[in-house]
Amino acid sequence: MTAIDRRTFLACTSAGLGLAALHRPVWSATQQDTLRVLIGFAPGGTSDTVGRRVGHHLTGNYAKTVIVENRAGAGGQIAIQGLKGMPADGSAMLMTPASMLMIYPHIYSKLSYEPLVDVTPLSLACTLDFALAVGPSVPAEVKDVRGFHAWVKANPGQGSFGSPAPGSVPHFLGELMARAGDVSMTHVAYRGSQPAVLDLIGGQIPCVSAPLGEFIQHLPTGKIRLLATSGAGRSRFAPDVPTYAEQGFPDLVINEWFGFFGPPAMPDAAVQSLNAALREALQAKDVVDGLATMGLEAQSSTSAELRERLKRDHDSWAGIVKQVGFKAD
Image 1 (cartoon, rainbow, N blue to C red):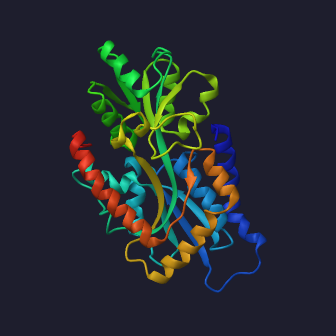
Image 2: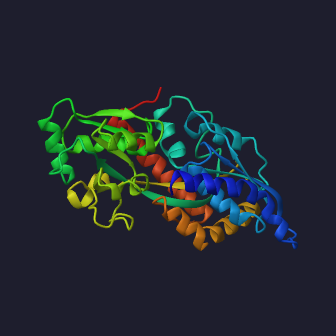
Image 3: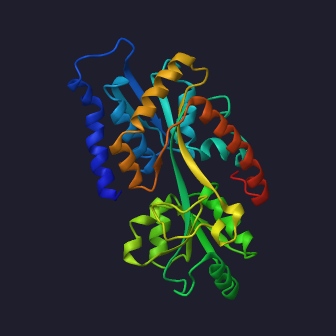
């Protein structure tokens, strides 16, 4: 989705989420008056767009009015903190990338929330793969990860890679990619993926590790090249690009997911009601197609499935963080 598309969608949904209910005169007895959706990032970004697209479908179905609240700051932590104080009656939820819950506990010495206690899993929202891209400062004959490793070794001091943020999944993936080739690379942290991609296009940095969807709109220009994607199989958004695993790096099969969470100690009836509404919304064609424009695969789950996934990924990332040795504070 282009920046203009996102701004247009944001403007429309900001008005539409509150007014859509006016076109639905009949309400069920269990329908919420208002649902607040907390987003830990600024309007117009990927997290915000996912939350608003799903929120648009919940309007008039689950709640008369859906209000998206952007509580940006501290890399998504402020929204999670805010969720803890919300009522647990199904009138509030959080939409967040997994990193804040599966990685942050291992890189911050102090967090104001416990990821396995202070949120109630509701449903998965979507999944995404990452990609490794190089720009015009890397010779055209570099066509794969091993070729890139060879170029870095032949050009000491030029081997840097950008990522959307320190402690993000793409940051760790870049570090693991460098270690897999026994090369030394400097990590350059950006405030988001697009600033990194723009520097990549401009030749200011040779390589960027970021969500695959962040590169898609720039591929037709020919100014960047994808060397690998991080999924277990090739992505439908870049079917000609081999995975890390295909290129001999089976330990670099890494993806991320976004999920919906309620406040702590949410009653089971409220969980089931909101889960059913979310699963229906995530199957809507315009939601599926809209997320696909950003390289995201819409995917729902039961509450129990999301809880298990969070626990499994939280535990597995403890080892990855220890291996890399990164701390955010």
